[in-house]
Length: 124
Image 1 (cartoon, one colour):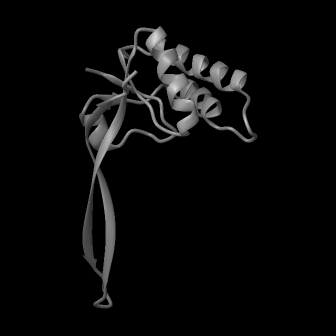
Image 2 (tube, one colour; image 1 turned 90 degrees about the vertical axis):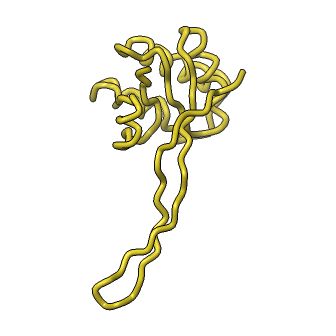
């Protein structure tokens, strides 16, 4: 199933392989503006932005499912707005692994790598 990415971040290669797609550039700019809050939001502003994001998702070709993530206080209203548009809501699930990289000077650099491992449904 194709999944529209409604997060601040571009879809990773692993997510794309799993069917995630980013909105077209103009819609992505709108999405990012709706997800970015510079000031303490009112309940009205949260609900308004959630509805605007849901409209973007509803207009995305193949967006029967949406991947969301971000400010916790926005996720429940956003999930509700998406469900109103008959869009299934999921969160990305990642597996974290620690990897070591040998450096030219003989030292070892430890890196944490997150890999997409599937979707978790947003429960009502």
